[in-house]
Image (cartoon, rainbow, N blue to C red; front, top):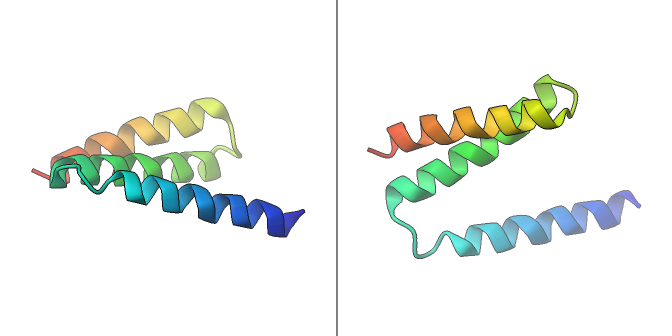
Length: 68
């Protein structure tokens, strides 16, 4: 079961990264920041939905500002 989960994660990451091809640099930084923030928020809060969404929001804002 773990192998199947890993394959789906890899497939999802590949699809997400290919979707960033036509984005501006600031848009890419915002998306990457949101993704990293979501993972960080989920880890810090034990997988709660509020922590994940909050982490994505904070990460997106930080990524947006870095991309300027």
